[in-house]
Amino acid sequence: KRRWNNEVVIATYDKRCYSIMDIPFDQSPSSLPVQGLGISHAQYFAQKKKITLKYPNAKPMIQVQGRNDQPIYLPAEVVCANELDPQIRAKLPLVASYTPRIRHEAIEEMRRYLLPGAQKSQGGGLLPALGIGLLDERVVVNVTKLPLPVIVAAGGRIPEGQG
Image (cartoon, rainbow, N blue to C red):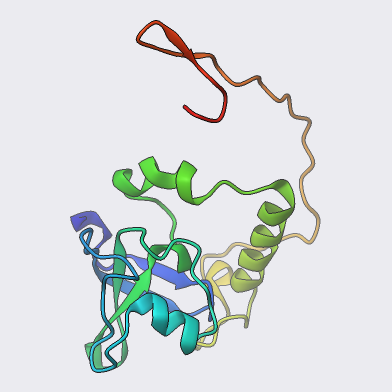
């Protein structure tokens, strides 16, 4: 948790960059109320942002620094970062199982965030600031799909999809 303080994340719904202030692991979008509005963050995103969260009960929330150093709480599913906390990484199979089409669309969306001028904040974009450029074409590689491993517990085989 400590190593994430002051790390920068991108909100996927508005392409804004925020600095992490805290990660409350005991809160979820449906359990954390929006201060002064009397509704949960899940309800806020549905009503105000027109975003239906896929995982409204997933913990943690990401506390970021807003205007005038005021805290803003974002659901983990709407932020992107360079590295993941080990606790979040352990939950990735539950949260981030994407089909190839959805994965491709998500990569294209993130790619648009990184292009010069795509952010609403000042500057030429994240990658050019780091001296990195993007090519328009994708790298194509051959893959081999491996079969799922057999899972055995207490001497019995666990059926696929239940392990």
